[in-house]
Length: 179
Length: 378
Ligand code: SF4
Ligand code: SF4
Image 1 (cartoon, each protein chain N blue to C red):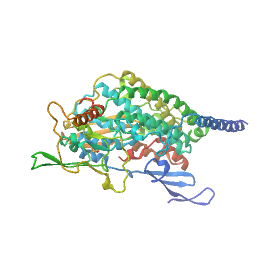
Image 2 (cartoon, rainbow over the protein chains, first blue to last red):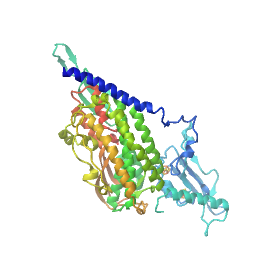
Image 3 (cartoon, protein in one colour):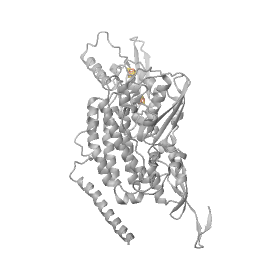
Image 4 (cartoon, chains in turn blue, yellow):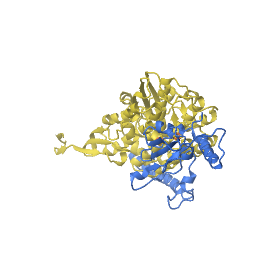
């Protein structure tokens, strides 16, 4: 007899727990949806919603890069390649090469932490799909540019002041709290 | 292949089956060679090594700072803990003192990571035995944690947040407020989760008394973490070999009580994780309250060269005791890095428990052990 009772009790429990679960599922009809139809129907570009700390594809501002090679040295995978040559005409040192291989990069953020001017930084960009891996090597030097030398007593040109400022702000937000 | 005459006199034969390497319930690339007699398993031999990436060897080729992002990949579901193990080992070797705020940032990040990892564990557990909906609920919450992580450290999965000597970036007050808001939202969700899955009669019947691991077996096979606690052993590195700021925090160590069947069954292993979710929330709240001011990272030389020596560090990761054995020869590179992970030993017990259980229960057993393929092979 007791077996029969257990049998029907089990059926009752099963049915009631199914409805218990269903009630939660149905409650989602009146809740705010937690998904969006990416990428067609989004209110805002995802890149704009990402926090400043987001570690996306790297960019370099060559105008404030001092050529100290700190980033190249610290990268565990050697995906940064920097070439510097002395220019015979101006007798200055020029960049001949600044490549970052996005293919190899693991977005660890060690390079931007090492940078003294905040010229190498992660952007909010994360979509890098392309047909050819060679397209993932980012070239930041197209023609030889001189190395940046911080002026004593601060920058005077507005354009440079802005650039240095952006770098500083990025460093305050991201770089190690101590520095 | 063994041949035997069954009790009915009919000729029976064991069948060898391959579960995996590409099987939806193995969470990565795992393979089991299963010998079955009909539905009943006679032997299940785990075959590991498909995801070996030489992470230990890479450690010898990277600088001390440069190896931290690689440790992320040891266990992608709980990258923060892998970071912490290595950083603690390096700090111990180099005699680096982590500032208190750094320690609190670490614990906050780690416990958030533990919640995320356990959500995956319980979610995929449901999915493996046929309940898809709870998995989506769990992943939804995990996405919120990923968003928080993105604010804390800029990445969603491979965090590389910890540094030798502290953390990479301070947690801002706004982020702390968002973590608190998330906890307020999350704790009721656990109840909802219980209603959806844990108290579901079908789920309980499916798991209670299935693949019981006794206390003795658990100890003998060196199980760690929630799997060990589910068998009734009160052992948690955070409490028993304290590290970081855990001694200042008040939390409980949930153990399996066999409330729906026998102690140490699959249901216990599942439910211990649910209870740990709530414990982690408790730890997080205390940390947010107690967080001291000050720097979050100590000054460590860029060319970090700890004196020659060796150390072994144990931390409590979501999959149990994670150990880092690190040897330094005083140079810029670690001489040897050895990582001990919980999933590896969890795999070994499958051999012992599986004879006599059904093929379908093998899936429940694997899921309940919460093994993570990259962590097994490293
Ligand atoms: S983010 Fe890491 S891997 Fe990428 S370039 Fe910088 S240091 Fe190298
Ligand atoms: S990007 Fe920064 S770290 Fe790299 S060379 Fe330029 S200034 Fe130095």
